[in-house]
Image (cartoon, rainbow, N blue to C red; front, side, top):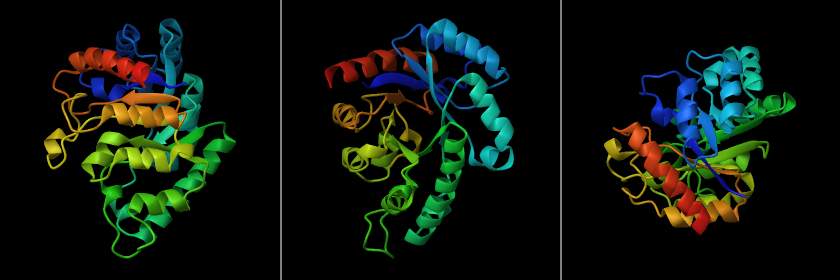
Amino acid sequence: MVRPAFQLYTLRELDEPLTETLRRVGETAYEGVEFAGLGDESPSALADVLAETGLAAVGAHVGLDALETDYEATVEAYQTLGCDRLVVPSYGEEGFDSAASAAETADDLSALADRLVDDGFEAHYHNHTYEFAALDDDASFDTSYDAFATRSDDSLGLEFDVGLARHGGVDPVTYLDRYADRLSLVHLTDTVPGDDDALHVDLDEGVVDLEACVGAAVTADADWVIHENGLTADPEATLESSADRVRELIDGA
């Protein structure tokens, strides 16, 4: 059953400890949070607040550099937090500029996913826009994302961001259907293509077919639909309005 969650990066500008931000989210209809760093708080303190609020730690965006250079300390922190899904939030445009580079990226992240699985985690990759550029060098794939997804191991989940995919020029529902068996986390974002300042907008202020995307997430049996607006000018208002809207979308799917 799909449940609603919130990406905490949206609230990064709030002048408060992350523990208080968690309590703020816990007062809404959201049932889980996705971390984007742990701030200055200890993982055990955050775990205590998650237990207090009833929020689930549905995942965490963790930079590839931390997983490559400080692997043991990184996984220990998230084990303490009780978060068993780690998401690589980006790889870099150069990793998707051809079918060959997408294959190398897939091999790299698949090896990381296998290591994380051995340590009790799930690994996921979160797309941006550049993965959806058409490939001129390989007619076998529509986009670099397809080359990457086809080459990567099933141990690597695909956290699909529907707004960024739409901004990148593809129909997100097509991709949600195409890779349904790899999806447990879906980023529900809205966007206005062609305007980098509107890469993220509040729900229903862009062009994404939100109902269709949530319906596809439900059909794919995803676990969580996660809202993010990394460009909001009013994070508190975005939290409140999106909580009700995401709940409505899930209930109506």
